[in-house]
Length: 106
Picture (cartoon, rainbow, N blue to C red):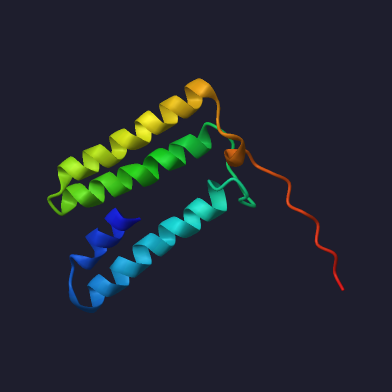
């Protein structure tokens, strides 16, 4: 999120503020809707992994676009290593989808 926000703010002026705050908000909305463990429309594997790859690749590309490509590569490499370790040893329990508690209506 910070990488995408940084990219947006590099445009300067009002456009920079809109992109610097708007682009991360879009990524948050996508992650919350399709990737988060308690997402209403959580994607199944491998589609979820592909979406995660795309979002982290956007972060890498955003950093590369502003001349910070080593940090972009480091960000993407950290993501790949994280996913490889989680896949090898199984996802942590907190990452598994849980049923939402039913709320009673008054």
